[in-house]
Amino acid sequence: MVLSRLTMAAVLLPAAALCQEDAAPRVVTPGQGDAPPSDAVVLFNGKDMSGWLSTAGGPSRWKVENGEMLCVTYTGSAYTERKFGSAQIHLEFKVPDMPQHKGQLKGNSGVYLGGATEIQILDGYNNPTYALGVVGAIYNQHPPLVNASRKPGEWQTCDIVYHAPVCDSQGAVREEGTVTLFLNGVLVQDHAGLKTREEMCQPGPLLLQDHSGFKGAPVTEIRFRNLWSRPL
Ligand code: MG
Image 1 (cartoon, rainbow, N blue to C red):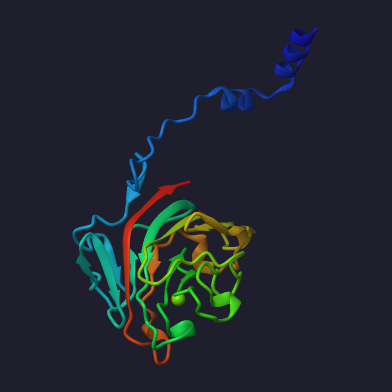
Image 2: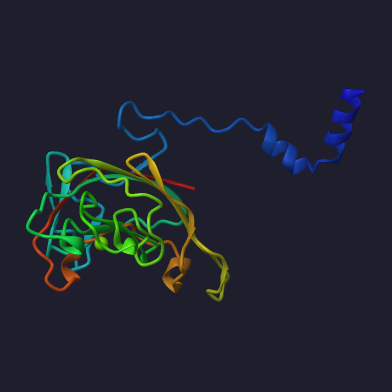
C-alpha cells in the first residue's frame, strides 16, 4: 500500500523535479582552517593588488603587507575588476584603535555590493552611533539585528549572502535584492531587502571603502585579508 502511494506520487511529480531531487549535489571541499572552499574565486592573492582598481583611477594604490591589504584614507576606494551578481562572499577586516575619535570617524570603511549597497564597517566596540551606521548595518537601510563587533585591533569576519535584484530588460525590478550577513559568525542581517538602484540590475564590482569622502575624515588604516567569493 505504501509502495503504491509512493509510485503514484512519482507519477504525479513533474520529470524535471524528480531529476533535480535525484541529482547528487556537486562536491565542494571546505578549506582547512581559514582557507577558502575548493570552488571559491580568490579575490586577493595576498601579495599585491592584482585584480583591484582605484576609484581615483588606474590600479589600486593600496599597500600590501603580511598578506593583508591596507586601506589608508585618501588612497581611494578599491574595487574588483571582476563583477558580481548573486554571490557568497567572505572577507576579514581589522579596524585600528582610534581613542581620540568617536562615532562615524572611528574605523570607518565599508563593503559595497552591486556598486550601490554598503555594508558598514566601523569600530563597533563601545562606540555609540546611529543604528543605521553601526558595523553590520546595511547603511541607511537596515540596522544590524545585534552588535557583534570585536574590539579594535582584532580580526573580524564578514560572511555575506548577496542576492542581486532581478530586473527586466527595461531595468524594472521584478524581485528585490537581499543580503544575509554573519559578522564574526553571528547573524546580523537576515534576508534583508535592498533598495534597488539601476546599476544593481547589472553585475557590479565588490568595493572596499576609503572613507575620505566624509567631511573631516581622519587618517584611518583598515586592513583586509582572505577575500573570496562563490557565485550563486
Ligand atoms: Mg562606511
